[in-house]
Image (cartoon, rainbow, N blue to C red; front, side, top):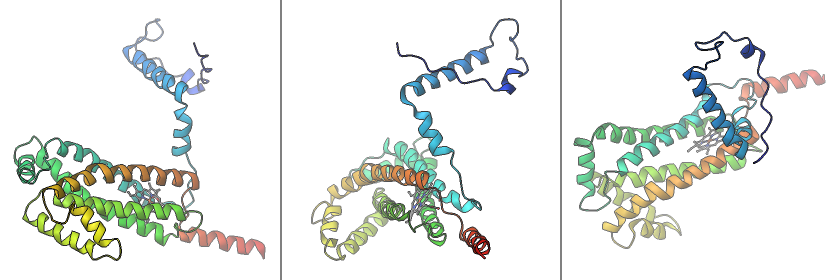
Length: 267
Ligand code: HEM
């Protein structure tokens, strides 16, 4: 058996905490048993993984003076992505990526599946919300000068996240396979084809061949639900790691205040 770590000291407030039902007569209430089971399960995992150290490092950080609501935009973008992931999983349970069945399966989701219209609506409007949030978050980091040393790499990761988010929107638009999504995607793929050097290769890759056909839809679906979300999740992890490691940038007016104070000190 591996040696147990020593138990943490009990805070004074808890020692003198008022008694609960069942306490004092030697019996434990169901709540006590529940709490003990929860604590020992968490301890059991932590003793073997030491995850709590990493969690504490990530969650309990010093933030600069003047931190405000604009700093929540990155987390808001992350929650929009998570909502897309959850609703996407439910849509994938009913959606069929075939040229003859895609439209019918989407119609089924909207009109017949339990809460289908709601989940599809969440996914559709959520995609717009995510795009708006990512742009506003990018504007915040730009205007606060957060792209400068030592955060350049996080800015570059952010740019890749932006491109991937736009790719999600583009590939998702085709999936209902109605007239609008079909023709709009043909236009989009042709625009890609006009890009310098890589353009024609990119549009061939997206079309899955020289013609827009049945294989195009399955390619878009694979990109939309596997390739790009996987890449976004991995890069989001790297992005958040760098935020935790480097800390966030103070707002420009606080930086101006601080440098004024320094200038006065030097006089
Ligand atoms: C999926 C998309 C994204 C997610 C989930 C995300 C998430 C976050 C979070 C949670 C933070 C810390 C808190 C905050 O400042 O809001 C952050 C910071 C940052 N993000 Fe993003 N972000 C995304 C896209 C972008 C984009 C498109 C850019 C720019 C091109 C960017 C550049 C930055 C920078 C430079 C910081 C550091 C801010 C500072 O030091 O004050 N991010 N991001």
